[in-house]
Length: 247
Image 1 (cartoon, one colour):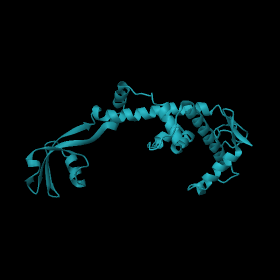
Image 2 (cartoon, helix red, strand yellow):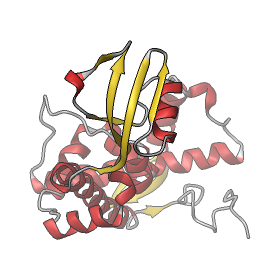
Image 3 (cartoon, rainbow, N blue to C red):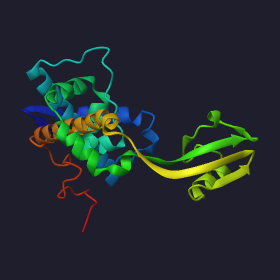
């Protein structure tokens, strides 16, 4: 019996059953829905999508001459990455070194311009704002700290009651002694991460997001060409009898 056909090659029901058996025998097996239920049939449909995606990846990798190389660090997919990729593509990328090799090959020419990095930095100022700071002159038990020279202290760096008092006091006020500390406080100093310091991380994040989008669009388009047999429709297909999303 056949569950799907990918580029003329069948995915058999036996393969689906074997993958289901492995899932149910794994660490999360007890959490999976029972066979014969609506949720269980939807899980089986999802497994068919995994097998289809693996076939698509294997075929494209063979066509490109891509192989999984030993010693290459695996891709790390956080929750945002999994959401962007979709559950099927994320699952295949997480567990298949060949899929990871193909991902790197297929997205190798993706770039992010300096203009895009700067635009992201300008559009998200809250991400690069540091806790406010105050210029203080500090004494401990009456003895000057830092040689009596003023220094910047950031919110949260001092012990609770001292911190609250320092950052609530008006400019020029003397605070303390509190827990043996005395401060003369200067103005509040807003602080931000410099663009030059933030740029490498922004570029890396934008680049990976763009790579994921490239790969997901490619994989979704190729997987959509598969022919799915009745009972093995895509879980999100609204014509599938177990589809539960209704309006």
